[in-house]
Image 1: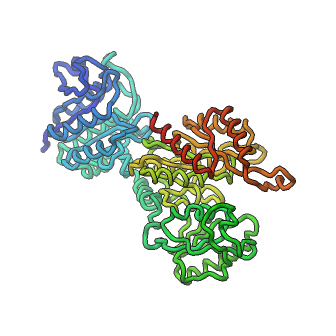
Image 2 (image 1 turned 60 degrees about the vertical axis):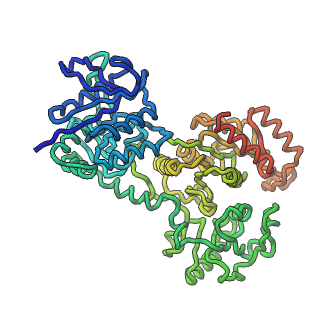
Image 3 (image 1 turned 90 degrees about the vertical axis):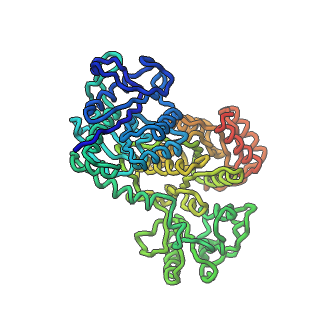
Length: 604
């Protein structure tokens, strides 16, 4: 026994006098303010014609929401779905359309959730360009894409995924249109319509709800992809902001640092931004730092911890050891010291946060090493990516060791002090210690074990998760340079940086430069960034150290840039590139840079 199904088609309207409909005039409710025959309604005519094949067991009502140019307006879509929720008793809503960028995504999702809770089946097409769009991407909505293997209108491929659900016939097919009467066209929209037809048949036979409908599709599908669900579960447990960092396993209250190398400087400089107390700083005697202080080593106005020998560690004074990257010089000596430290930490049950990836070497539940592995990859949904709906600021540079991470922390502090919610991906292993949302440790001793397209997919998932958390701005920052300064060795090619740029897609960039950089190289870097992701380099930040102008300069010995040297350089850079120039470490300059960033994103 079958029951009659009520279907709502939300689209561009229908050409009501089309010869394919004979004497029947389709029902159309207009939200666009257009009258019958106005606007572009070919798309809606094609979709309705496909779905009308089931009119013997279904009643169909069309909702025209596109404007005169055939465009979808977000508020009109939300208004239409709200009206359907409140005033129409429908079983299925066909949305052969969607929004890749949605300012009111939470409101749109809320309305879809309300409809789903009432038992309404929502079938929605993904964007034809290839991105993830909404409502198709919402859980509980049947999200449809074209699948080449689906050659017939009742061919379907099922994906056990919370985002992408069904592949259907979207290849070239003959469709009813407004002008001319028929055309040949392909697209996800028509795959969506074929899916709606089949879903309506399942409903008329007694199925109900998302799960039952999807089970019916599985029973008749050409193929069912089950690996998507497995990967997605891994994604939810591993990619998100390190849950282990917030669990009892890695709840840091007091931590000691070892060794005191460059990677530890930010922890001392920004100790007030940590959620834990630094209980001590330790090193080995071979480092020549024992007996000195953090302030003396850093030559800066920072908290002055005495640097003690690891043989003098007070093991009762902390719960966590933060172990930095091993230096390139004297690595074997430091490695032996690290081995002894870890052995005793394991014996005493201490937490270990290691910048280097030691997971394969030590099987210890209280060990955490920032890394990105293949098991953390999101589902590959035919390459579909999320479009980023929040403003994104990137910090890039012309070399390594020029304060890019310091600048990111300075800006993070400014935004938070001014009441902004910040989402952030850090490329230093210490990023999570400062409360950043994700770590992508691609710098020294790189522990990102994915590359190219997989890395872009991973970073895009992280960026989308930050958008869903409703942050005000997303901060990202790269490592080293964006362009090779020489092409004589493959190690000089910054390919990881290029992938990071592609994956994070900044809208605005602050470029960090050195006083000794050639102007042509800076110019090439600016052009590369702006062409690569259609961003704008809105400021240059000068690292306040330059190479000494004596024999020691050949060993890269540096000295502080004088005020006169900086002013000369600032004038030169401003004149050449027509962007504001700031100096890292100058509080007034950083404040002005922050205000410049606000101005850029506010559009003032």
